[in-house]
Amino acid sequence: MKAQHFFQNKVILITGASSGIGRATALIFAHLNAKVILASRNEEKLESLKQEIESTGGQALVIKTDVTSFEDTQKMVMESILKWGNIDILIASAGAYIKDRSHEINIESFRESFDINFFGVLNSIKSVLPEMKRRGKGHIVIVNSLDARKGIIGDSPYVAAKSALDGYGDVLRQELTRYGIGITSIFPARVDTPMIENIKVPWISPKISPFRVAKAIVKGIKRNKAVVIVPASNFILGPLNNIFPRLLDWLYLKLRIEGLNAE
Image (cartoon, rainbow, N blue to C red; front, side):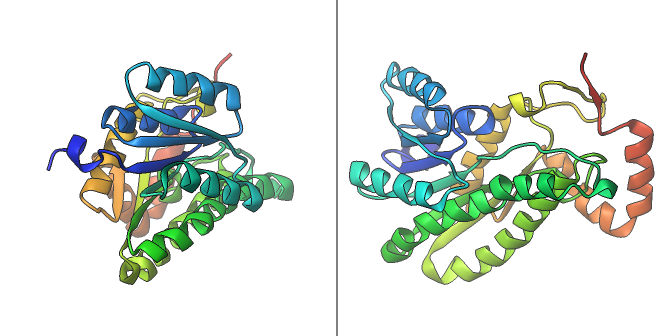
């Protein structure tokens, strides 16, 4: 079945929809005739995206949401259901790139990162699950990062939260199988989004387009894949780190994978 027919009239809730992967995903699903719910804290950008979608015949609903607030994510889900009756797919892509040196152990940096990158995802999932369980179907996409498979110097708060999300998603996928709910975890490499616009990355680790990740999300849902790594060539990163961690440490240091702050 073609993707356009597969997703036609599906109700898709996207957190972090105002920019980056979330925005690209919303545009692609709208093109596939899905009904998209746009959620983030930036209502102005969401309204602009809604107008762009509707100008080409798509359907979109804007709900200003702070995913770090469970009250907000509950409201987000209730408004979505009131508008379109149900939620077929959740794309949990809201996140923030929070850096700090691990050896300095700035607790506030870790709290901030976990609030949005881990608990923000949990709030969104907890809010949609009751309805999906009641219907006996649904799909949840957890937008993670390759940082969860191999940490980068200076990214400790972000890596810690994404690693926790990796473990949570792995267990959640196993538990929700009996409810008919699919879980897909997406692990993109560095994505060309506002989160890292000020970082110059080395040639060996180029930034990829958010639309490339969005297309991988579409395929992942359609094929009910458990894990999607973008680009696919990076699938070896996790196994290599398990077998030769010090070798990868050396390579990351030699190649300056962490990148440089742009002037």
